[in-house]
Length: 164
Picture (cartoon, rainbow, N blue to C red):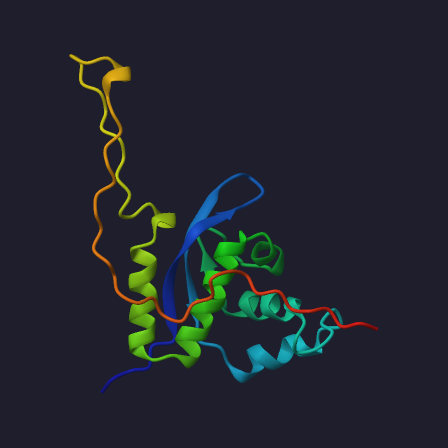
């Protein structure tokens, strides 16, 4: 008998820096329920279904862990770098509405991302016989093309403001 997977691990591209300067990169997100998407609409600070704050509140409900934080709050989600927020939005969409292939593509695209430091070559350290100035930076190693990226956003999308 197979069981339904309801919680997924992730690694943020940059990571969340908390008030004490600690970096939190890994976490878990659970599948969303109908309540997770409806409750934030009742929040008096949310102006409607197009309000960007809605995303923050939904992610606050479904991100179960972030690094060593005991409780993930909306303040923490608001403090994410834009690339990390965009990643969590994509991750949410894939685990809740995507296929296994889309999930695998997102994980593989993230693993090959230079934002995580994967696939980037560091300059070799100078040896004792050569001075530091003689150590030339290495050419970046050619990484194999991971193929087409899944349908991910290329930038944070701006929602037009309503004129009142």
